[in-house]
Image 1 (cartoon, rainbow, N blue to C red):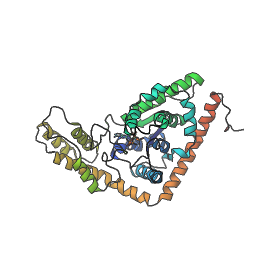
Image 2 (image 1 turned 30 degrees about the vertical axis):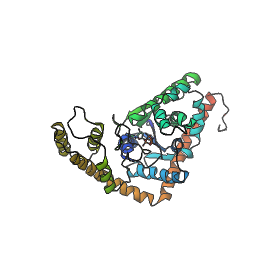
Image 3 (image 1 turned 90 degrees about the vertical axis):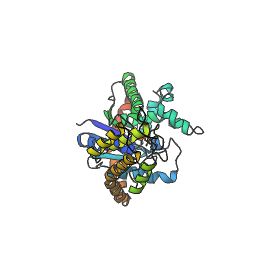
Image 4 (image 1 turned 120 degrees about the horizontal axis):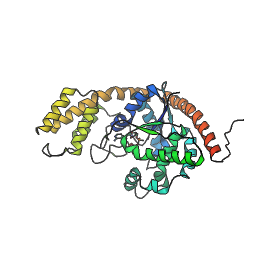
Length: 333
Ligand code: AQP
């Protein structure tokens, strides 16, 4: 049997280029060689402020964007977290194994809590336990993620070890599959990462060419290539250019050379980045639009995905409950 892979994406807003380059692009490769589960993690998305009226559309956007970017429901399972109740069931069992201190020092918790200090829920703090449950439920051994998720993945490994040590060998320790070392940074604030929930920070996979050009024109850089250290905003634009498969190598070399010799005009760099993005995102945007025009097909895809996921989730829960000394309701005769 192929090794199992799990990864998730939150429906907290429109799927963006950071998600695509940092995660989805590698999922498309991974689905070819592994038994792959990709989850729209809606229970994670409710740990920050959200409007219930938007949630259904966001979930459909996430499904459509992932398929438009290359996920193939014939090759992998795509499903919605809340359609598989075992995620929250395992989460509670793992919560009872998790030291509080491990949660309080998580960078993402501190960052997201500072954005909404008036409402820091226990759910936001417990987020990494739910993520551990997502992964361990499928006994996934490989988790393709961006480097911003490594700290959370480490908790999944700690909890797998702790469970195995306490109750007997059950879970493999999930290994990260790092897609790229670098994070894509926010266009309007390149000290922060590009995020769905940070307005002005991202290029969405659904953005029209003119929106892409306007956003890149507004991207923060610096006053000119005269400093010893490249400014984070400029570095980010170069990264976007170099990660885009369609950016011609000679243009990239010319722009790098112009930067090093300090005569680069940022308008030239921005033009090249915008055109590379427009070219690579146009087929994805068009396919996404076609898919969203037929939401019933997307709903069938996630229903089928949840059916496959639940078979495994159920087997894991039977084993976990037995090991923990809990009588399993699900035990088959
Ligand atoms: N800026 C980024 N650069 C590279 N990779 C990124 N990822 C997210 N942002 C970047 C990767 O995308 C996958 C799915 O992310 P997620 O939706 O689960 O949560 P996130 O990391 O919190 O993404 P956002 O866009 O920043 O959402 P919000 O605003 O809700 O917090 C992950 O593998 C992640 O590494």
